[in-house]
Image 1: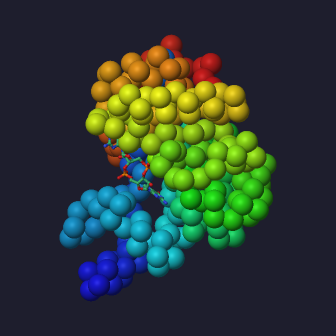
Image 2 (image 1 turned 180 degrees about the vertical axis):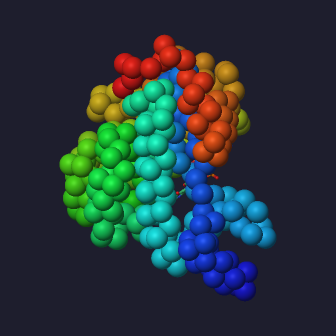
Image 3 (image 1 turned 180 degrees about the horizontal axis):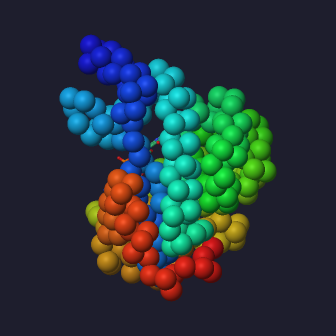
Length: 268
Ligand code: C2E
Ligand code: MG
Ligand code: MG
């Protein structure tokens, strides 16, 4: 408990002291292996603890409501950074930036207004911003969810369902809600979990998504044989340690600079 209290006080200060930063993990085309975008992942550069991973403070941020200012920081910082890359590097043209949005942020009014404000301020093409929501968000309050998602879509941003396959939600919402991408949870993709049964699940998800015009991103691709299987089932995009761990903005900028010129243009 004491630990949690001191962490809460620290986290409150982290926001004002600029101790939060973003790392970026590339998302590549399965067929081309070219970078098509990045996912922004928050980190806390704690003065004593060092770089703290999100699993150790996002739940606390959600409980305390600090997720609201934290989430606003992440959205604006991610959009600002992608806009800078797009202005400075021709290879960044058309790259997308994916941002995680937690349930509390989504349920609370003001997300749409904040996103609209950030897009206007940064000048980022709305189609380059992808908001990642988990299945739990969708099930929370169906009517509110549908309305908010439609308002976000009206801005031109894309919607992705994160960790797909881990929630226990109805598949019906996929048809009813304006969803652009599904991210298949890494438990179906990598390591021990990537057994025959998982492969069938992945195949079914892709078939379902195809029929609904939704593109599919595989999370947690660590090995070449895992990528090969995704190629076989015609998965669209992949993300994982095989391509790159999440890296700081300097390293991400270098990854963008390294994108072959031939890969520029003609991106989805
Ligand atoms: P996520 O959105 O599903 O992000 C993917 C996580 O999987 C990242 O962990 C990433 O480092 C990890 N990962 C990527 N490729 C591989 C792989 O090949 N193998 C393995 N074993 N892991 C891989 P990270 O950065 O620790 O983030 C964990 C979770 O924290 C995220 O899961 C997301 O739910 C949450 N999170 C991160 N940043 C934010 C944020 O800004 N806001 C909110 N609300 N949540 C965030
Ligand atoms: Mg995510
Ligand atoms: Mg995920």
